[in-house]
Length: 277
Image (cartoon, rainbow, N blue to C red; front, top):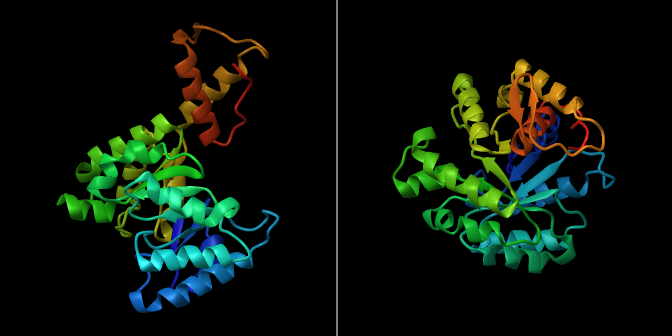
Protein backbone atom coordinates (compact mmCIF):
# COMPACT_ATOMS: atom_id res chain seq x y z
CA UNK A 1 0.00 0.00 0.00
CA UNK A 2 1.31 3.43 -1.01
CA UNK A 3 0.48 6.51 1.06
CA UNK A 4 -0.08 9.88 -0.62
CA UNK A 5 -0.64 13.14 1.22
CA UNK A 6 -4.15 14.54 1.22
CA UNK A 7 -2.56 17.94 0.64
CA UNK A 8 -1.47 16.89 -2.85
CA UNK A 9 -4.51 16.13 -5.00
CA UNK A 10 -2.25 16.50 -8.04
CA UNK A 11 -0.54 13.30 -6.92
CA UNK A 12 -3.60 11.12 -6.28
CA UNK A 13 -3.82 9.82 -9.84
CA UNK A 14 -0.05 9.45 -10.13
CA UNK A 15 0.07 7.41 -6.93
CA UNK A 16 -2.76 5.19 -8.16
CA UNK A 17 -0.82 4.51 -11.36
CA UNK A 18 2.51 3.85 -9.65
CA UNK A 19 2.06 0.10 -9.32
CA UNK A 20 0.95 -0.36 -5.71
CA UNK A 21 -1.78 -2.86 -4.89
CA UNK A 22 -3.54 -0.13 -2.93
CA UNK A 23 -3.14 3.66 -2.72
CA UNK A 24 -4.10 5.42 0.51
CA UNK A 25 -4.87 9.12 0.76
CA UNK A 26 -3.66 10.30 4.14
CA UNK A 27 -5.71 12.92 5.97
CA UNK A 28 -3.87 12.53 9.27
CA UNK A 29 -0.11 12.92 9.74
CA UNK A 30 0.58 14.12 6.19
CA UNK A 31 -1.79 17.10 6.44
CA UNK A 32 -1.19 20.33 8.36
CA UNK A 33 -3.85 21.34 10.86
CA UNK A 34 -4.97 24.40 8.86
CA UNK A 35 -5.42 22.33 5.68
CA UNK A 36 -7.49 19.46 7.04
CA UNK A 37 -10.78 20.65 5.56
CA UNK A 38 -9.36 21.25 2.08
CA UNK A 39 -7.60 17.89 2.07
CA UNK A 40 -10.79 16.15 3.16
CA UNK A 41 -12.78 17.75 0.35
CA UNK A 42 -10.14 16.94 -2.28
CA UNK A 43 -9.79 13.33 -1.15
CA UNK A 44 -13.51 12.61 -1.10
CA UNK A 45 -14.01 14.33 -4.46
CA UNK A 46 -11.33 12.10 -6.00
CA UNK A 47 -12.81 8.96 -4.45
CA UNK A 48 -16.30 9.96 -5.64
CA UNK A 49 -14.93 10.33 -9.17
CA UNK A 50 -13.53 6.79 -9.35
CA UNK A 51 -15.40 4.19 -11.44
CA UNK A 52 -17.97 2.42 -9.31
CA UNK A 53 -17.72 -0.85 -11.24
CA UNK A 54 -14.41 -1.80 -9.66
CA UNK A 55 -12.36 -0.99 -12.76
CA UNK A 56 -10.57 1.93 -11.15
CA UNK A 57 -7.59 1.88 -8.78
CA UNK A 58 -7.93 0.31 -5.35
CA UNK A 59 -8.21 3.28 -2.99
CA UNK A 60 -8.04 3.65 0.76
CA UNK A 61 -8.46 6.63 3.06
CA UNK A 62 -6.71 7.27 6.35
CA UNK A 63 -8.84 9.62 8.39
CA UNK A 64 -7.86 11.39 11.60
CA UNK A 65 -8.21 9.58 14.91
CA UNK A 66 -11.86 8.98 15.71
CA UNK A 67 -11.40 10.38 19.22
CA UNK A 68 -10.58 13.80 17.76
CA UNK A 69 -12.81 16.53 16.32
CA UNK A 70 -11.12 16.22 12.91
CA UNK A 71 -11.70 12.49 12.93
CA UNK A 72 -15.40 13.00 13.63
CA UNK A 73 -15.57 15.54 10.80
CA UNK A 74 -13.91 13.01 8.49
CA UNK A 75 -16.47 10.33 9.33
CA UNK A 76 -19.43 12.70 8.91
CA UNK A 77 -18.10 13.87 5.54
CA UNK A 78 -17.55 10.28 4.46
CA UNK A 79 -21.11 9.39 5.47
CA UNK A 80 -22.39 12.17 3.20
CA UNK A 81 -20.10 11.25 0.28
CA UNK A 82 -21.81 9.48 -2.65
CA UNK A 83 -18.99 6.93 -2.81
CA UNK A 84 -16.81 5.15 -0.27
CA UNK A 85 -13.14 4.13 -0.42
CA UNK A 86 -12.29 0.48 -0.75
CA UNK A 87 -10.59 0.54 2.68
CA UNK A 88 -10.73 2.89 5.66
CA UNK A 89 -7.72 3.29 7.96
CA UNK A 90 -8.40 4.37 11.54
CA UNK A 91 -5.39 5.82 13.41
CA UNK A 92 -4.54 5.34 17.07
CA UNK A 93 -7.15 2.69 17.79
CA UNK A 94 -7.01 1.70 21.45
CA UNK A 95 -10.27 -0.21 21.91
CA UNK A 96 -12.80 -2.17 19.90
CA UNK A 97 -15.30 0.59 20.71
CA UNK A 98 -13.45 2.90 18.30
CA UNK A 99 -14.28 0.51 15.47
CA UNK A 100 -17.84 -0.06 16.64
CA UNK A 101 -18.53 3.67 16.60
CA UNK A 102 -17.30 4.12 13.03
CA UNK A 103 -19.33 1.13 11.85
CA UNK A 104 -22.43 2.50 13.57
CA UNK A 105 -21.98 5.94 12.02
CA UNK A 106 -21.38 4.65 8.49
CA UNK A 107 -23.84 1.76 8.64
CA UNK A 108 -24.07 -0.43 5.55
CA UNK A 109 -21.68 1.89 3.70
CA UNK A 110 -18.79 1.12 6.03
CA UNK A 111 -15.84 -0.22 4.00
CA UNK A 112 -13.34 -2.77 5.35
CA UNK A 113 -11.54 -1.21 8.31
CA UNK A 114 -7.84 -1.22 9.14
CA UNK A 115 -7.07 -0.47 12.79
CA UNK A 116 -3.73 1.28 13.25
CA UNK A 117 -2.11 0.13 16.47
CA UNK A 118 0.37 2.84 17.44
CA UNK A 119 0.23 3.33 21.20
CA UNK A 120 1.31 1.12 24.13
CA UNK A 121 -2.35 0.86 25.11
CA UNK A 122 -3.24 -0.29 21.62
CA UNK A 123 -0.58 -2.99 21.72
CA UNK A 124 -1.86 -4.19 25.10
CA UNK A 125 -5.43 -4.41 23.80
CA UNK A 126 -4.55 -5.66 20.30
CA UNK A 127 -6.19 -9.08 20.86
CA UNK A 128 -9.50 -7.47 21.87
CA UNK A 129 -9.30 -4.97 19.02
CA UNK A 130 -8.62 -7.77 16.53
CA UNK A 131 -11.74 -9.57 17.74
CA UNK A 132 -13.96 -6.51 17.17
CA UNK A 133 -15.58 -8.28 14.22
CA UNK A 134 -17.87 -6.48 11.83
CA UNK A 135 -15.96 -4.62 9.12
CA UNK A 136 -12.50 -5.03 10.69
CA UNK A 137 -10.19 -6.55 8.07
CA UNK A 138 -6.65 -5.81 9.28
CA UNK A 139 -4.41 -4.51 12.03
CA UNK A 140 -1.58 -2.20 11.02
CA UNK A 141 1.47 -1.22 13.03
CA UNK A 142 1.94 2.51 13.53
CA UNK A 143 5.65 2.55 14.22
CA UNK A 144 6.49 6.25 14.43
CA UNK A 145 4.02 7.12 17.17
CA UNK A 146 4.58 3.86 19.02
CA UNK A 147 8.37 4.13 19.05
CA UNK A 148 8.10 7.71 20.32
CA UNK A 149 5.82 6.70 23.19
CA UNK A 150 7.93 3.67 24.05
CA UNK A 151 11.20 5.57 23.86
CA UNK A 152 12.34 2.87 21.43
CA UNK A 153 14.22 3.09 18.16
CA UNK A 154 12.07 3.32 15.05
CA UNK A 155 13.79 0.30 13.60
CA UNK A 156 13.55 -3.46 13.50
CA UNK A 157 14.89 -4.21 16.97
CA UNK A 158 12.95 -1.43 18.67
CA UNK A 159 9.61 -2.56 17.25
CA UNK A 160 10.16 -6.32 17.06
CA UNK A 161 8.17 -7.06 20.22
CA UNK A 162 5.23 -4.95 19.02
CA UNK A 163 5.34 -6.55 15.58
CA UNK A 164 5.17 -10.02 17.05
CA UNK A 165 2.25 -9.18 19.32
CA UNK A 166 0.33 -7.50 16.50
CA UNK A 167 0.77 -10.44 14.11
CA UNK A 168 -0.28 -12.93 16.76
CA UNK A 169 -3.39 -10.90 17.63
CA UNK A 170 -4.33 -10.59 13.96
CA UNK A 171 -3.80 -14.27 13.20
CA UNK A 172 -5.74 -15.38 16.28
CA UNK A 173 -8.71 -13.30 15.10
CA UNK A 174 -8.44 -14.19 11.42
CA UNK A 175 -7.62 -10.69 10.11
CA UNK A 176 -4.63 -9.41 8.15
CA UNK A 177 -1.48 -7.80 9.57
CA UNK A 178 0.10 -4.78 7.79
CA UNK A 179 3.58 -3.47 8.53
CA UNK A 180 4.75 0.11 9.02
CA UNK A 181 6.55 1.96 6.16
CA UNK A 182 10.33 2.13 5.95
CA UNK A 183 10.96 5.85 6.18
CA UNK A 184 14.55 6.05 4.85
CA UNK A 185 14.02 6.62 1.13
CA UNK A 186 17.76 6.45 0.48
CA UNK A 187 18.06 2.91 1.89
CA UNK A 188 16.51 0.40 -0.57
CA UNK A 189 18.64 -2.40 0.84
CA UNK A 190 17.27 -1.72 4.30
CA UNK A 191 13.74 -1.63 2.92
CA UNK A 192 14.22 -4.99 1.21
CA UNK A 193 15.61 -6.59 4.35
CA UNK A 194 12.87 -5.13 6.56
CA UNK A 195 10.21 -6.35 4.13
CA UNK A 196 11.65 -9.88 4.11
CA UNK A 197 11.77 -9.87 7.89
CA UNK A 198 8.18 -8.66 8.13
CA UNK A 199 7.07 -11.44 5.81
CA UNK A 200 8.97 -13.97 7.89
CA UNK A 201 6.99 -12.82 10.95
CA UNK A 202 3.70 -13.31 9.13
CA UNK A 203 2.76 -9.83 7.87
CA UNK A 204 0.54 -9.67 4.78
CA UNK A 205 1.34 -6.15 3.61
CA UNK A 206 4.30 -3.77 3.60
CA UNK A 207 3.30 -0.13 3.28
CA UNK A 208 5.24 2.55 1.40
CA UNK A 209 5.56 6.32 1.46
CA UNK A 210 7.12 6.84 -1.99
CA UNK A 211 6.56 5.24 -5.41
CA UNK A 212 10.28 4.51 -5.60
CA UNK A 213 9.86 1.94 -2.83
CA UNK A 214 7.32 -0.21 -4.66
CA UNK A 215 9.66 -2.23 -6.86
CA UNK A 216 11.85 -3.11 -3.88
CA UNK A 217 8.82 -4.24 -1.87
CA UNK A 218 7.40 -6.31 -4.73
CA UNK A 219 10.75 -8.00 -5.28
CA UNK A 220 11.07 -8.78 -1.57
CA UNK A 221 7.58 -10.30 -1.57
CA UNK A 222 8.48 -12.68 -4.39
CA UNK A 223 9.63 -16.04 -2.96
CA UNK A 224 12.93 -17.50 -4.20
CA UNK A 225 12.69 -19.46 -7.44
CA UNK A 226 13.48 -22.78 -5.75
CA UNK A 227 10.63 -22.27 -3.24
CA UNK A 228 8.19 -21.42 -6.03
CA UNK A 229 9.17 -24.51 -8.02
CA UNK A 230 8.82 -26.71 -4.92
CA UNK A 231 5.42 -25.31 -3.98
CA UNK A 232 3.95 -25.52 -7.50
CA UNK A 233 5.24 -29.06 -8.00
CA UNK A 234 3.93 -30.20 -4.62
CA UNK A 235 0.46 -28.76 -5.14
CA UNK A 236 0.24 -30.03 -8.72
CA UNK A 237 1.08 -33.54 -7.57
CA UNK A 238 -1.90 -33.89 -5.23
CA UNK A 239 -4.60 -36.01 -6.90
CA UNK A 240 -7.83 -34.10 -7.49
CA UNK A 241 -10.47 -34.78 -4.88
CA UNK A 242 -8.03 -36.45 -2.52
CA UNK A 243 -7.50 -35.31 1.06
CA UNK A 244 -4.04 -36.61 1.94
CA UNK A 245 -2.67 -37.10 5.40
CA UNK A 246 1.08 -37.14 5.86
CA UNK A 247 3.08 -38.27 2.82
CA UNK A 248 6.56 -38.03 1.35
CA UNK A 249 7.51 -35.54 -1.34
CA UNK A 250 11.08 -35.47 -2.59
CA UNK A 251 12.16 -37.37 0.49
CA UNK A 252 10.59 -34.99 3.02
CA UNK A 253 7.39 -35.45 5.01
CA UNK A 254 4.45 -33.27 4.00
CA UNK A 255 1.39 -32.69 6.17
CA UNK A 256 -1.34 -30.05 6.46
CA UNK A 257 0.91 -27.19 7.73
CA UNK A 258 3.40 -27.81 4.92
CA UNK A 259 0.57 -27.72 2.38
CA UNK A 260 -0.59 -24.38 3.76
CA UNK A 261 2.94 -23.06 3.40
CA UNK A 262 3.08 -24.27 -0.22
CA UNK A 263 -0.22 -22.55 -1.00
CA UNK A 264 1.03 -19.26 0.48
CA UNK A 265 4.23 -19.42 -1.58
CA UNK A 266 2.35 -20.22 -4.78
CA UNK A 267 -0.21 -17.47 -4.17
CA UNK A 268 2.49 -14.89 -3.45
CA UNK A 269 4.23 -15.84 -6.69
CA UNK A 270 0.98 -15.38 -8.62
CA UNK A 271 0.41 -19.04 -9.42
CA UNK A 272 -2.91 -20.82 -9.26
CA UNK A 273 -3.38 -22.28 -5.79
CA UNK A 274 -3.46 -25.86 -7.03
CA UNK A 275 -6.01 -28.54 -6.38
CA UNK A 276 -7.72 -28.80 -3.04
CA UNK A 277 -6.01 -30.99 -0.50
